[in-house]
Length: 40
Image (cartoon, rainbow, N blue to C red):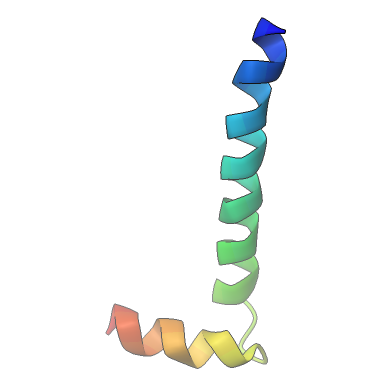
């Protein structure tokens, strides 16, 4: 039970990180330009 409580937030966190990285390094993604504008 305790392990599940610890693993779930980590899993969700890494999932979001992966999505952000995929968008960030994929220029063909429509969201890429939006992120680029926000960062600049």
